[in-house]
Image (cartoon, rainbow, N blue to C red):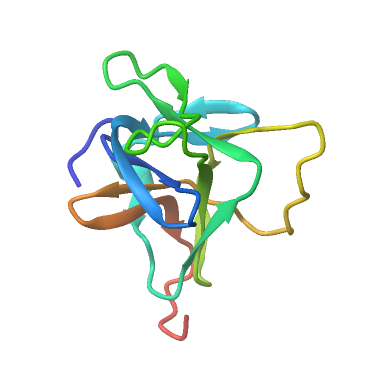
Length: 141
């Protein structure tokens, strides 16, 4: 990836749980309730052994390409009216998240999420990328 701000596509899950990317919004990361644009230096390819999760009752938040302002994606852009959900990565051991998935909770009583690291994930050139770094260089991981 080049240096500077990220231009990764936002990812979301459709009503069947299929993970899709949307080039109308950039991937956003979350930190302490603030949405941001991870830099290229803060992004790595999704590590082998990582998993992607769908976050129930949570809508993805991306960034407007022209302004980098946060924007809620509340319906499937490929099937208008279809419900969608945010997506997060649970990374393989030896990796540390920089930003969490950017989302907005829907409803008064959303299901509680298990205590996992819900890392921000985006899509670029046929690959998933996460806002993370390798924190343990040992090859056992």
